Length: 119
Image (cartoon, rainbow, N blue to C red; front, side, top):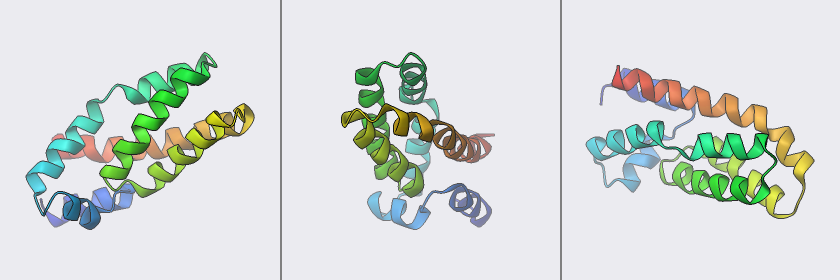
């Protein structure tokens, strides 16, 4: 992975060095998993569940995204989905809903950085 690519990923919110430690230094594995993240369906399911006010489906998708983001060292997004899951489980819908726009912004920033790698 080129330095410019690493810098773009880091600027987007991915702790590349931490992610590489999780991947035992394999840039190839990290790139493959980032590609899988970009095509994962959980975000769309989460957004739809939030729109439909379906708490259970929103919890399931947010929990899956929390795990994925944690494994890929997407620290900010991981923390956002962690809070989202906590709020949804505690039935604090207004708090969970209030985070939705910001989560979308952070997700889009990371998704776009990954898409640039594949272009």
